[in-house]
Amino acid sequence: MAATSASLVSQLYIGLRRPCPKLDSFNSPSFSAFDPNLRLSLSPPKPSRAIVAMAGSGKFFVGGNWKCNGTKDSISKLVADLNSAKLEPDVDVVVAPPFLYIDQVKNSLTDRIEISAQNSWVGKGGAFTGEISAEQLKDLGCKWVVLGHSERRHIIGENDEFIGKKAAYALSQGLGVIACIGELLEEREAGKTFDVCFKQLKAYADAVPSWDNIVIAYEPVWAIGTGKVATPQQAQEVHVAVRDWLKKNVSEEVASKTRIIYGGSVNGGNSAELAKEEDIDGFLVGGASLKGPEFATIVNSVTSKKVTA
Ligand code: PGA
Image (cartoon, rainbow, N blue to C red; front, top):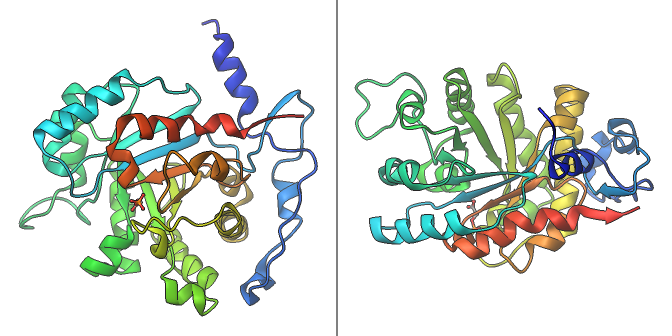
């Protein structure tokens, strides 16, 4: 099949990066484990006219987490706005409606956008009142599930081990997992950001057989729903550390392929600046994903990755 010029161009963009990377400097003691040569060894610069500021080789990924919001009416309006939005082709786009509305969304939303659940049960369905199984999500046409979100960790009380098991089970049923990690404000202030993120990553790594269908969402808890977005440098610093952790603890290939997306007060006004960072491979968006045109702006911020050599 002949490739369209648009897809050829988007292939050019994937995995390329600026030829002269500026290595970030780190103050945290956790950075004794950081390998500054990683950036060069992961994806050496390739000659190209139009290149992208991307350290990983995965496609840009934007998810909309609708959380516990919406009614039948407001969701049909949101779906209509998404159906008419113009979305850049070189982005994986996913929305996560509340369980109750997944079927409505699946039956009305364009196939261009995939559907995620916001949670799933830790094993096979059965006598688990109030839970929804991965098999049921597959049955409704879900491709993804968000796991380890900070609202489930810190409000509902899910722990690392339970979240790891959920991820393993969801993967075993053919769902992709948007695996969230992130530190509380007091943990950041105590200099524990990397320790917390690495511990949460390890719990996933200990449980899952493969990282092929996992997208990591770094969501600092202090930035979620607060309007206090991480600066591009703060986000980039953690994304580099996560990629380095994957390289050291899983494999170089997984470190390169796995999308590491940022979440926490992303909106149509700040997504372009964040997207320019080499290790930010997309976004997980809460509040701003409830507005179709603004969500489309965030999806299309992939264009700010395209820079001229
Ligand atoms: P927010 O939520 O964009 O409203 O901060 C992000 C998230 O929780 O995924």
